[in-house]
View 1: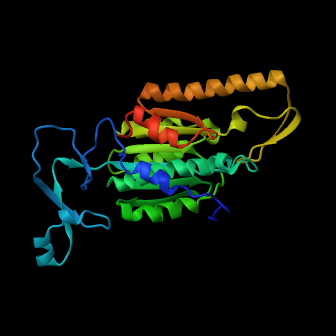
View 2: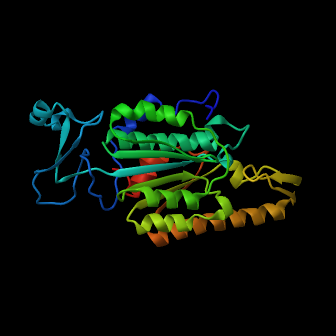
View 3: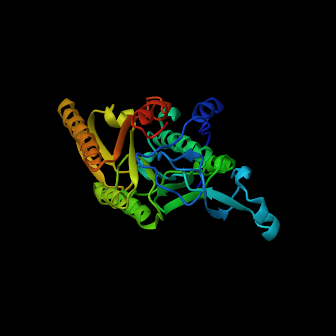
Length: 304
């Protein structure tokens, strides 16, 4: 995938410093297969040895078992039974509809905005010692980064996101169902998307994730021009993903109908998520993206 030209940095240094103290949370922490930097919310348990796993770059060397290393010449990390990590899977919608507006302000471009949110969440996950998998969903399937953990992988994560370009048609149902099928253990699933899916389908995929014990958050992005179209008159509209054409006349009445349907759609997304216990965040790309991370998600209990 070709990198978008002249893209601003995804995570400026000042933003990264504000993300450093944060940690992704789930209402019920899932016990992981590896040590994380978080503590269990269970009380009365002692820190006792539970198991070993192979050392990976970014691990805390203080947890290395030097006796085993001396005998086997292989590094192993000691796992303690009251320590947990969180499996975090971030899904970035990189379908053609995310390449909007094509000629608008770069800071309000949907894909760039979505990349920044994904980068921030991925950075928090890596610096917290979580197990991160980052996927970019586009016309050719899904390109992935990870599984990865540790601050040392942050630069590679940003490089991966920087090379993502919008292309093709998104099938959110299929993408979410695929994650549910392949994920080895429950965790936190974060979808960053405009929710323009093939035939509008996404609920079956969400249900598949929830049925396997995942906690899910949908971050729904729209550009201001999609919320308040600055157009009137006779238009020929072309779907950027399917290339289907539609001839319409846009006047005040048509814009009113559009606005009501858009609001009903967003309300429906929110209601379906809340009914199932999933998180839903709706925002437009002219709002500061940091507010989602530093305020909205913290209030929802997904960050601490």
